[in-house]
Each structure stands twice: as C-alpha cells, then as structure tokens.
Image (tube, rainbow, N blue to C red; front, top):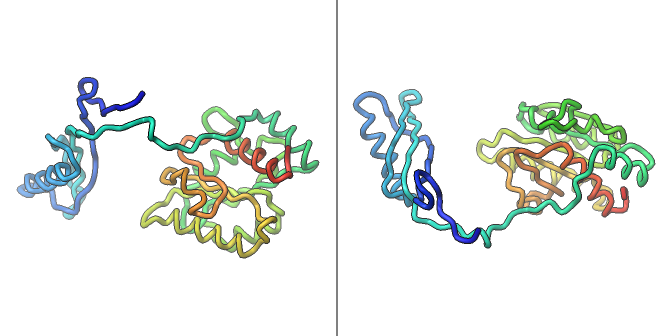
Length: 250
C-alpha cells in the first residue's frame, strides 16, 4: 500500500473524526466557550480546519465532543510493526490430538479476572463452551481441563489455584483500565508467579483485553497478550504451540 492518508469525503482528503471529553461546562451560555476549547485542542493536535460537529454536556463539569477535520500526516504502511501470529491455527480436533499425543493427560488451564475487574465477558468468551464468533470455547476441547475462577480474583488466589490444579497455563482477562489498572494488575500477577515457581516450571501466562498492546508481552512479564477480537481457537492453538516448544506438547 505504501504512503496513505485518511479518507473522509474523498480519497486522500485527510479528514478524520475525533471524540473526547473536556472538564468544561457546556450548558447554556457556556456552550460556545466549551466548543472553542474543543476546537483549540483539535488545532493543537494538527487538525485544520477543525469543526465541532457535536457537543453534549455531561453534568455541570464535563462536555463530550465530536470534532471533524483535516490532518496532514501521512502513514507509511511499510514501516508499521505488528505482532504476527507465529503458529498454525488448529481445529479443536487437531489441538486435542496434539495434546493427547504429547501429554497423555489433559492440559490444565486456569482463568479469571483479577483485581477489582468484574467484567467476565472476555474470559467467558474464551473459556465457556458457548465461545465467541461462532467458535466453541476451551471447555469444548476434550483434552483441556478448564477452571474458570470468574471475577475479582486476587493474585494470591490465582497463584494458589494454579498450583493446586498443576496448571499448564493461566489466562487472565482485564477490561477495567482506569489509571492503567490492567497493566498494574498484570505486572503484579507476573511477579507473583515468578516468585512462586522455578523459572522452568511456571505455567504459561496469557492476558487479554481491549486496551492491551500485543507488543507489550515482555514488558509485562507474560508469554502472550491477546487483544479484542481474539477467538478461542487462536488461544488454544497458541497454548499447544508454546507447550510444544517447551517439549510438553507436539
């Protein structure tokens, strides 16, 4: 693709839409001042012209804006770096066969939402048999034993259950991201598992959620980061692939 620009009304016109909230009162006579503040911010971000197309007060102290305007930045797709899937995508039958051939026992997965996170939609989409995007969850896999701890699991509880179950892998979902809670919780979890296990005995640590960056696995101390749209088959295939590299599954 090479060098590209955003598309709004016509190809390459550079038009983009941006939404944000400012701590300003946008009610009544304050609306014009609030819209001016939003336009000023958009200008400083490189939008020219910047048109405030929507402003909605959110109580007396905040206003939500949608701004439409032109940016002059270019994107070189040849320099974009992404985390490519470096393992084959297996069907449930293929994954089961690989686990059975190598382990001769069921592969144990412990999962849950840590910290104060009570959003189980993500972890349930991967673990529960109902699955996601037309795919069955990991409970459907005959050679997987899935232990879903649900929401608001403390890190010590997660470590304790992983040890009790002799877990091969630990899956954690994080949706709550205020003040980078997902990053802090993940680092805490990784540190706890490093302390609780010898380096060659630690289970695989996998985290996922809408605000994670796939490239942050090493920085967070985990083996893999999955982002929005990840399917159960991708997770199952990764577990089989990585455990094969460790000589556990082939």
